[in-house]
Length: 377
Ligand code: SF4
Image (cartoon, rainbow, N blue to C red; front, side, top):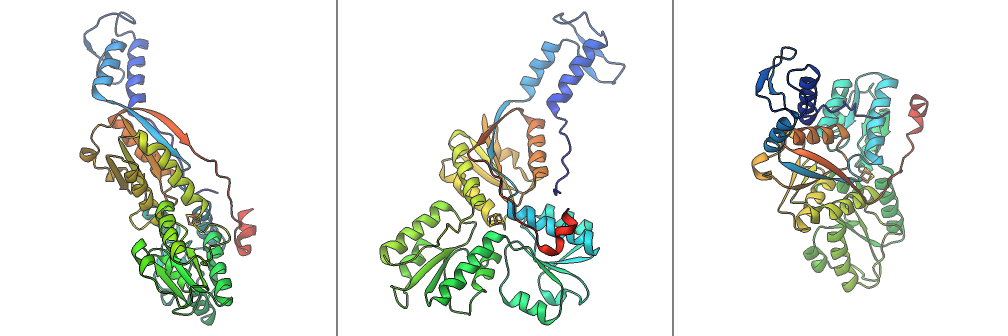
């Protein structure tokens, strides 16, 4: 089951070509290659040149050529796909309404689509009635949230991405070993709130910047470990880790990288397209950490113009100008339907040729919660 229903794209270029071919078939002129004046087409009431080459010339004049470098991978990751499936399957199994604590993923289009199917999004558990199922978002929640749900005897499903849960388990393991934990991440992001909330207050110190890393004073520099948010800039994080390692040679790192495969792959793909592009568009939400990082990666690669757009209507055409080459990608919570929409909008203004630039193939899938396995079959 997938979230997005993809409509085939009927493009401006298709329309021009169809009109030209239609004119030839209808015999409005003396045949291919003949010079003709404008004539009226009785079949489609459009005034058009019967000379196909003239139409193609007009198309070229009207639509500047654009090479579209499509980053791959882009868009939905396995954790987002799983979280959306959990809401859809819960609606199918338990009926509407199903409550969701916090935006299930950071994308308004996805959230509004699920609302239309009967999901109700709330910020806190006390907004959930006793007899309704509630789902926790992909970003993860502090331990206090499932504890509160249990004490109210609420039925809940946890859509936390397994790669975020892995960081939670790591934090608990390190804490049990008596180690002081540094979390590299962004203050206030739901994932950071969830990860810090796995341990008692004060057990985790948040570090956001290189300056924070320089200023940090540990209780015992022989017993510190770092973990990270899953959706950070790979390069920024490496810089922060470099400072920590230089200051505290005994600091321990996660057994396996915390920045997830989807974040890393999408950043690598932008690094591959950005140096070749005059501009880069990133489809995603302003509160989506991994999407914002993609804009930064494009800017650092020297792109004249890199912008985040939630959908086609957000594109600032004036600022974009007429690039010869445009890079396009999407954050891990942006559905394919929005990528198609942006490509369709570009085709309205440019003669687009698409080149997909693939840096890695993804085949990651996560298991669904047991309670929904039957529904998924
Ligand atoms: S971006 Fe990474 S951590 Fe976040 S939901 Fe996707 S796979 Fe999981």
